Image 1 (cartoon, rainbow, N blue to C red):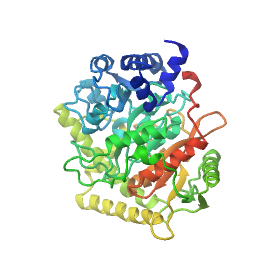
Image 2 (cartoon, helix red, strand yellow):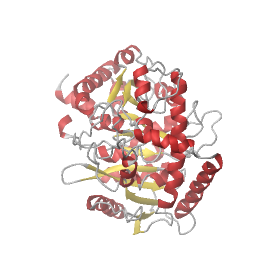
Image 3 (cartoon, rainbow, N blue to C red):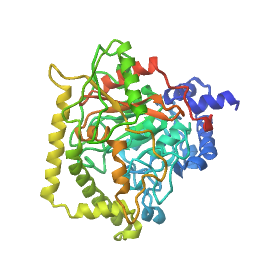
Image 4 (spheres, helix red, strand yellow):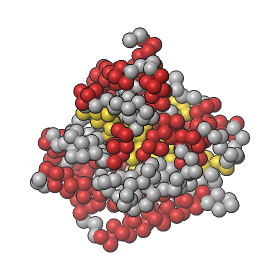
Length: 485
């Protein structure tokens, strides 16, 4: 295969790849084999893919070419979803060493397959997804393709590193406090956290982290994000709730230019005493200038519930309870209780805290999150409400690997150091609104810096339309890490 063809396969988005296959430019097998070669050549430096299913993928190539993503390669995050017969670890050493295999597919995996995607393997994730960096003791750190000494973010860091390096055009991701948007920002990708209830967690859960967790993808294009959202956003029987549908598909709606919007920019102190770096401020100002040039009304303003410091304690308590339950669940899969040395220090401490939380206290924490959500959502409602809020995705560029990892003496070190990375993203998990990180900016060294756009609940269509409008005047599709060109 010629060099320009290799580059075309590496950097095409999923829609382009699917069209190449439909038009006969490449066969599905050629596309998958090229993706496999890219993973084999580049993964040793990134440690993004931890479980390979290459042979199975080639054997199970979909026959029908009528599926929208027939033959397009995809990677799945090794956390929270089951892929039948495939190793599952959730970043935990005990599950890894037991070589535990999932039984049955999660519903979103079935939907990926039905759409024609070909699953190549699983990507690295921090243990139980509790940190915004991907450095599990079980698998070792994943590295940022733009600088191998930096974190690719987390918890979907393996997926983001793989897509940024051109292994696949999209990869499965999930987000409970920023775990789609933080890696997207760190690796120069598009990362949408959908509205609460938009994507089913069937059949294994109705909700997770009191409704803060959702699945999704990281991708290189807004249109891929929209197209995959169409595939995944059909409710399942028995879901406790579901976000309202747009009148048309997300992909078709996205092509319409949005109306003139009222847009707020905000970056000051998302937590008391926390100020974003100058580059992150400059990124938001740059986005504001772009939006004004498109005819939108832009002003500096922030929600009344801007500082989430007060609700952070309730959020972390809920996470602790869920971690305790997850560790207990791993024990049930293995047929025994986990020992302290089989769980990372952070999660062992969180689980202990979770077990100490009374049911009435947990419900009080849920009430605190709901109160915060109402206040935050009010910024987008009423005659004086804003259509869109624009913030930094993170308060800093991606941190150095190793800088956020706790120790046995200070297991909560990483948790505390996470604040600058999730201060702008976690409130949107709590409120249930959709938020998207766009790769609009870079540091002087070429390290990506994301800008987050937030809309009111259920308004992904508006968010995608605006994101696409920005992508047309400030494209990023020719921006790739030098090591993988």
